[in-house]
Structures are given as C-alpha cells and as structure tokens.
Length: 361
Ligand code: ADP
Ligand code: MG
Figure 1 (tube, rainbow, N blue to C red):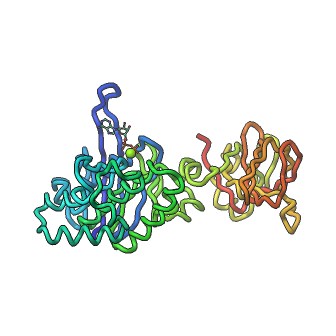
Figure 2 (tube, rainbow, N blue to C red):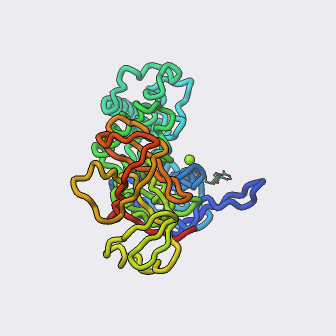
Figure 3 (cartoon, helix red, strand yellow):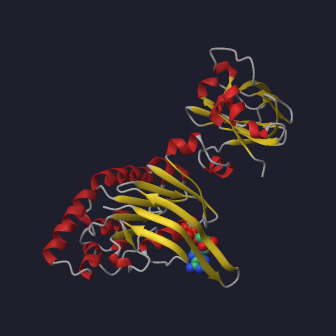
C-alpha cells in the first residue's frame, strides 16, 4: 500500500483566451498510507487537476509527486498502481458490464482465470452479480456508479482516485453510496483520494480534508478540526451549513463593538486575538452558537441581544432564523422547541466561547 506526496507542485495551463492559468499553486501535502483523504473546494479550484496529476493524466509544470516511495514524475499512468473513478463513470457503451470490468485487466495481460476470479470478488463486494451480462444503457445511475467502482476494485490498486463520483446521483442514493464507500475503504485497506465540491460529503467521508480555493491549499485537517479551528475566513465560510456568520466589529479592550450591539469577549479569546486590539475585525460565529434565551436554563449576564426576526424556517427538529446586526445578515439555528416565529422580537444569546476573529478582507 502507499502514501502519496506532493512537493511544491505547480500546474499551469495555457488558455487561449486567458493566457497562463495557474490551476494548482505550490501544493504540498502527504496522503498517509490507507488514509481516506478528501479534496474539497468550489468549482475550478484545482481539484480535478490535482487528481489527474496523481494519475499521470496531466504532467505538473514543476514540483515532485511520489506514490509510495517512488518519484513518479516520469512514470506512465498504467505503471503508477492507481485506479481512477470518474464523475461520468466512463463505461464503454458497447461492452457488457463483465467486459467493462475485465477491460483494464486484459490490457495488463492478466490471465483469464484470474480476471474471472477478480470480477466475481468485486461483484460480490458491490452486489452487482446480476448485472454482469447487461450493457451500461440498461443500468440506473446508481448501478453504473457501482460498476465504475468495480472497475477500480478489480485492478487492486494501492491508491484509489475518485473524482466527484456521486454528483450525478439523487440525494438519497448519494447518502447511501457515501456509507458504502466508507465501508469499502475499510474493507479494501487502500489509500483513497476523493474529490468533491460538496462540503457535507467531504466532512462525512474524509479522515482528513484538504480545502482548496483558486489553486491554493487553504487548510489540511480532520473534519472536527476544520470546523472548530478554521485557518481563515474562506475555510470558515465554506465548511458548515448554514455557513458561519460574519459580522463587522471593532475590538476595544474586552468589547467587540458591532454597528448596533456590543459583545463582551471571554478572557482566553482576548489573549488569542490580542493582535486585533483597537482594530476593525470580522466576528465569525456559527448559527448554532446563537441561542434563543427561552431555551436556556440560566440567564447569561452578557452577550444578549434583542432582535426582530425577519424570517423563521422550520426544518422539522430545528429552526433557522434570520435577523441583522448593522448591515450584516445573520442566521441562527435552534431546536424547534424554541417555537420562534417570524416578525417577532426575541432575546438572543451569542455564545462567544465559540467565536472566531478574522482580518477584514
Ligand atoms: P475543479 O476540479 O476544482 O473544478 P479543475 O482542476 O478542473 O477544477 O480546474 C482548475 C483550473 O484550471 C480552472 O480554472 C480550469 O479552467 C483550468 N483548467 C483545467 N484544465 C484545463 C485545460 N486543459 N486547459 C486550460 N485550463 C484548464
Ligand atoms: Mg473537477
């Protein structure tokens, strides 16, 4: 099995209209052996390009890529011991499922009996035994997806590369396949590098997550760590739904002064953020850290704000509510027990034990 390492990897494309496009800018990371690592970021941030460089389908402009302990800069894709699953499944339409699964192995000159054995094993793991004689057009999206994964499994690679494999499935099937992919990872004991633009998918699948934006790695961390300690405003706003609220403030002593309310910040936060003393800052607070005081069993002495709610949305067990602080729109999330309704005045507690401060951009 294998770890994957990027050292100062840069990829530039020559675009006819835009000139030089830097798709990946100086990427450095190590995917550990048997790790499930997820790349996440908005469309165009360089995820697919990173994956294609690992696969050898794209050659980096500079920097080194290692798979295992082997420098693979000049190694042909088929000799890299990887298998890639594409977003559009890339099945051959004229071949049966069995022929699709066998195709890569035949190319590697695998003996016929062994091909048969591997296909049967993969088919059992993925519960696709009854599909082997069909053609791709006779399968549903979810079934095609399984075949695409099966085609990777039969290769028995050290590293699996997945490029948004679930994005063409409906929401329910996506959740089901997410669970299956996690189980599959444990079962195969292989390194998995998985690309998605969906932060929920990233948070649920990844043992660690690489957050990218505009070709740059923003942070590499475990899901809880990304959520609790985002490196910057991009990560803070990208991970979590609804996203973290950002409120323009000024830090003055232990007071955070927003347009029309003042907060008192806890002493340990004061120490952490002392570089912002006397400056304009952005307060970051997650929706679940803004609580309706009617749910609290105690009366906080500070950080209570009276607001008129603009809208309240019912999500079953939870409510989302919207209000403003100065020009900033703010979202809160509470248990439905709070029984909030729109256009009413409520008392809200901002739990600043959970706050973050960021540089204004
Ligand atoms: P993602 O997978 O995160 O959506 P990509 O890796 O596909 O992003 O693309 C990253 C950037 O590189 C984008 O700006 C994209 O337009 C550009 N890019 C990707 N492939 C090419 C190419 N073959 N030629 C020119 N530009 C490309
Ligand atoms: Mg992509």
